[in-house]
Image (cartoon, rainbow, N blue to C red; front, side, top):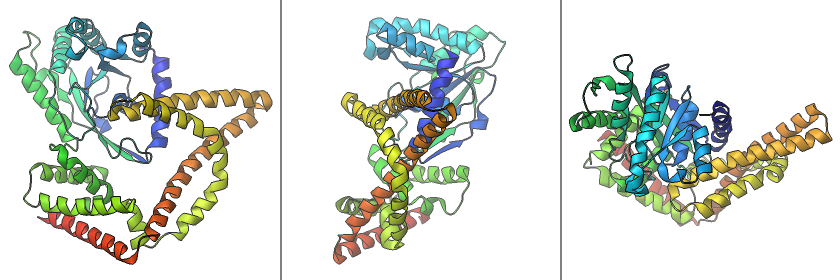
Length: 431
């Protein structure tokens, strides 16, 4: 791992995440062992961006294991290794490549023997869903081999991490990153003998339980839309007025477990929620705008703020739009599976913005004094941030126009369906 490249990319992507997400919530990062050999087991639904996010919020350098097919080109493999990424080959990459994992596992044992951290994705594949898939046993083999390398001189720990996305591909969405209590590997695996299937299963089950404990794990894919709609739009009905993030997670976690338990009233609640979702889809608006404009009647401030932000956002629109446009086009053109879209889009955007700002900083420095060039670059950056806020208010105005065009009967039906939805959620929580 090249530490300069690692921290350089970490800084770029950290800034990218802060701009892209409305809110990043981190829970229990204080539970991550420090100065100990550590495996971080992560759920996997958003391609390499999952690793980027965990790497940003773990306060120590982290190595990563990634699928072997991205290491085909030697030049790419060299860059990935400099970034602290090592390959793991699966059957999909061909049986002949499986033997190469021995070299990777040996490297992992060496990394862990230096009290460093390795992040891995024990599900073995990436799918866009809020569901924990069965874990593979590769982590058990790596952990057992590391203990053999340590002998009796050190303990090995696993911290489970869950990335709970709101809307992974959408600007101004929310993400909750949660870490579990560490698992002491020595309590499950015995390095004095060969790894047996029973030990591997028990260790893997402990990891699965650890990830599940910090994740909104909805077992039935057909319930994902129902859960996320309630979480995104009516979380207060589930969590109450508490502002404590740990308490909010626990209450929403209980709500997800109630869905998993197939409570008798689940179908009735889901029916009312889906009826309201369909009405929103017909109107082409989101719940937050129905609440803001039809229920609270707040629209004048939205138009005023939009007007105030327009002029300050012009430099940002002129200077900052093309890197976003290129990265978005690149992602749409190259991505075949939806779970890779955000990774390509945000990864490319972060790097393009850095290169672009470096270019304009050099140009302005030649044209102006260093101080004036710095102030101008900062002004363009903040103008770009204002431009993002302007886009949010502009979307709100579009929603207001759509709602204003609804006739009285349609508007009353929309509000009545919403009222039924809210009542159904309250009854479901109380049941």
